[in-house]
Image 1: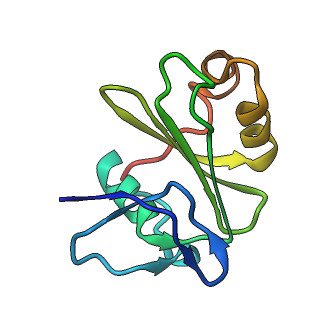
Image 2 (image 1 turned 90 degrees about the vertical axis):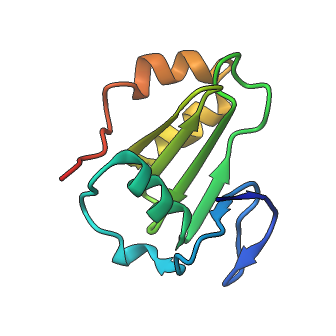
Length: 126
């Protein structure tokens, strides 16, 4: 079962627009996340159930095909990027915060994703 979108704060860090699982998963410090995951859904749930220093989201209307995008970083230098479309979620790791900011501020976030993110910053599975 999945949680609804909510605005809330943990340890003073904004969590605007993040989605939390309502399962029994406990909140983990982001520095304790594994380096690899068994599958993409496991990776996404682990990221969503962790505390991060930096959390940000893409404003609506920045892309015709990206419905949501969230950025999570432990160190404010690089982090996880979760992209949602109407049919699927994609997760990228080690995305520099500079790339996130350029993606977020691009005239077309979808085009920026296609040319600057897709195929790079791949999440490694076990």
